[in-house]
Length: 335
Image (cartoon, rainbow, N blue to C red; front, side, top):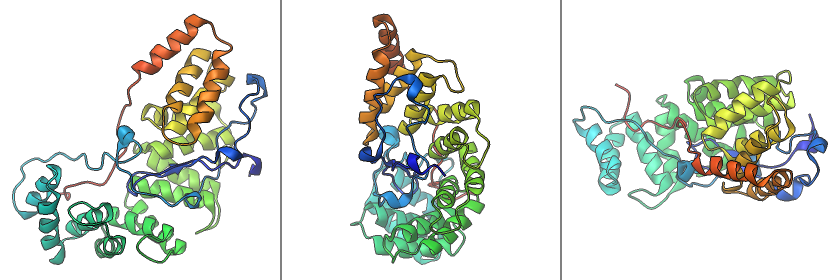
């Protein structure tokens, strides 16, 4: 382990949006050194969920810091479950809450999950973490993977229930095995953390890869970081760049910063100050403490560029738009 590289990078997210690291700026090394002195990447390994209790912001990029919660289409809707889903989709949370509650009380697992979600987020009802946990637990006990993810998250963070990281890990693992990408990502973090289970970078990489291949931007960043830092896999800068780019393209600020560093240092990609400046600029626009460090690196790169190069980089940053979506909980039950 490279203990000198432990920073705390943490973007606060909703439970069904992967948590991504938070930054403790005081712990970050100075970024004023020249390019050739930056042998160690200025991003982290061992970024733990315990660095900060996760709060519930909702958007992904505008909305990537909080979820584009539910993106499922609504074909051929009919009947009570679909009435509840339609009410939720059109923002009529009071009606949706009542409809989901009626279904949940009859034992419908998906409705129980949605009711927990609405209690958790304060949609159609005042926020109530305890009630949210209780409904998530009911759905989880019926095998609902999204609810298992929430139960694991809430146990891990002591939200609505007494903190129990071991129980949290068990529930996250149940969800991850069913293919929930967020849970897979969190299991990876748990193996890096080594608090709820034995620390194991190789297993962390296995779970990061599963989530990354489903499009989870935070897992993509961590997989890239693992290749970059040779943690759990042999060092491979080209693979690191590939996964950083996938994550950066989805709007992950840490990946944008890391990709900027790779271009700045010429690791896994040809040294390119224009691209470095572009990605540092985008990272500097994200929320979080890391934006100051990204801005400093952008300025460092600019000091080595011509005015024309800077203008090109700024244009590229201005024209950038995110691609893809991170999988989130489905609004409608699978038929």
